[in-house]
Image (cartoon, rainbow over all chains, first blue to last red; front, top):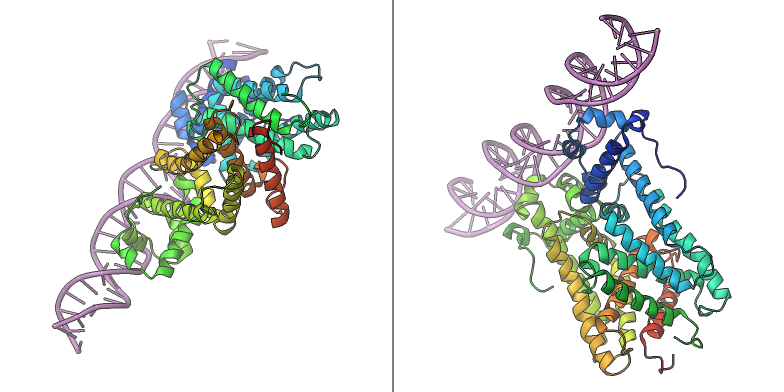
Length: 223
Length: 223
DNA sequence: CCATAATATGACCAGGCGGTCACATTATGA
DNA sequence: TCATAATGTGACCGCCTGGTCATATTATGG
């Protein structure tokens, strides 16, 4: 989740920032809608009103363009999650989970196409460097929650009969599924997350986190 | 989840059952590997050693072939889940969840390519009649667990402060994610479900269900 | 045995793809 | 101003796709 996956050509970097943004945005929209293999460079250039030759002056090939889009995605995710952390390192474990969930919602709201790209990468074969892309995101989650869970367990706020690895799995599964349900209505299990008001959404999140807390907290702790 | 999505041509029904099976299997493998749009009929006929013209004597077009494959998928899923139900309707809610999870594992073990097709349908746009296909499977889950949760709630084995809809969402999310992690190792959150022995896998399932139970059960019930 | 129906075949079609390149246009700076 | 470098352009290429169809092969039954 650190270094860039690919370097655009110098020509691209010389472009006006708005134009760069427009290109990344249009490419992201196409990859989000079609997935990697079906995405059409012809569509992208048509949408942008530039020629195909120009696109190839900016990026070596389809793969480089795609990886650049993914780079933007990971950068934005990092930004959102970091912004959600209140930072003093002493927060309640489940409060952090709640914060991350809210950050995820905010991210999807402002960059729905990036989240779609991510979902496509998860379930499509033959995406270039797919394993690497997926691990960048998954590892981020594991490395983020893992130490938090370890510490929480040591401090006795997590049941000792469940390994922290499993705690992280459950947390990760729930968060990921909630976000997927938010982004793809047919995965929301009838909760109708998609069109929900912010207040109702926060209620849903709170009660979801409450269930996790009850299930994962030692039984001698009050709710 | 009841009627067939599509009727193959009579010519296909006249074929020897082994040959029919071979065709469905090869098609499922290709759709699983490539998704609907990228799947190549040329590949399928090459794999089968038959001519493309023949395939078009069996099915009207690519869509009809795909829908027939999906029909087989839903049929098999139904079969597995039904076989897992012990049937007397008086089982513990969470035991049923455990049974369904085990049925899912068994299904993936014997038909990994069908599960991949399902995952592809979930995350691909432009799959023919996609909404309908997805709802067939999702509705099956909701309609299966919904009444069970309602009854369990009435009987006081589920917390009354959580609507059964949310219980079903959580259950569904956990089961689905567990099976996805089993089928796609990068979703297993580091649990390494894929290569796991049956015994260890059952332990994982038991402790997963135990967490759900603790989280969703009324607090005045013992563990 | 042979006429007829059923089935199998693969060359072929139009269309879309990623990628190339000779050329047109614009920017640069002496 | 003008030579040169940088950038923009879209017709074109080879390849693959889903789908067609005239023809070859096989099965059927009188």
